[in-house]
Length: 371
Image 1 (cartoon, helix red, strand yellow):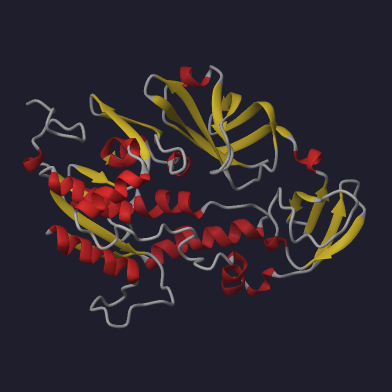
Image 2: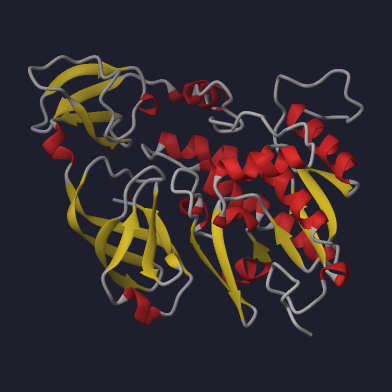
């Protein structure tokens, strides 16, 4: 059968294709659900309840519904699709929040969105979609995916300001072949226009800017909640080992940080290193932040080994630019040699690999920065 009427690369007519759409209650996933419905797919929307916030909607009939869950339910009702809510607070706590806290205590800068995708969204939701006999799991991420011969490759979205490929580098090959990302070839304003055409109540809903369980951006208060012993005073040293100040706890610092150090010098000071074992913060000038070598662990490779033997591009933070680099693989670890200086590289962040071809920047995989 021809796939010309199937927009997600499956050899089935849309009316015979069941898809699960991960509905967060935002405009992106809501629009994707509408697109799939309009194209004739059998759509099941699933919303995950991941954490217990303090802004519950008291009049909601949902037992643990925050505003996002209420919005997702309203969108599903408007579109006339089946909608399920899965309660994953315990899994989210153990797989994401606990990791977030422990990572900061080790002097790292964690990325909870990657952990969430890895441990909850693309693991448990993946399995739930399989249990429902769905043909694909659809999300509203801004990532371009191209499926050929039942193998899906992931690319940076065309909207550079919205691209989320960095956060999805740890997606497994099995998951990637099952996932679809319809918004990767669209701009954000186009998504909102489609939502308005569908008459969705979330068409003008603001994008979330914060980590979901840190809604006010105050991550240190979250750490204090779970680990009240985390605030321990320690020394601030310069790069020569001289004590030049005292800090209130290493969780208040990230590598590359300039503001809030509270130590004066004739030149601006930056956090150069965090020694969790000694409870020390090392500061220096910006030039001391320059790095060209990175060590990685826990690799996830989504390409053939030969593709990594060439010069590739890497990103070392979600908002960072692409950097030319060479990769030296060693089983589950890697050494990265950057071909230009980069500043403020922090353990706990991800280093994601890309190569450019006719379809754009393809995600080759990546790993976690250790040093």
